[in-house]
Length: 107
Image 1 (cartoon, rainbow, N blue to C red):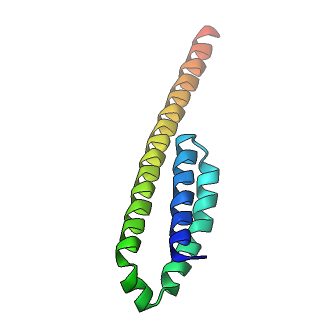
Image 2: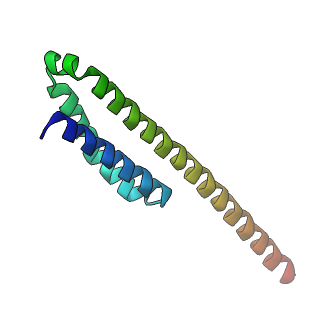
């Protein structure tokens, strides 16, 4: 696979991860990330100095794009986590209120 095609595939996977994050399909996001991470590392580690020099601008743009997508995914994850915590806390408060009500009605 050509360098341009490989870069495009990494960006496509990252975009897919963002769409899955927007749909709150976090298991799928983490699965794709688990596959993508070693492939990215292998790809960048396998480039020789000539390839890096000849494609430095394209590589820089790809890295920036992937990092930007990752930042969006992380932000969505943080929002999801905050909502989950809030929902859990509300559920706990409802249970406590229900238990207190039941305790008072039996007196």
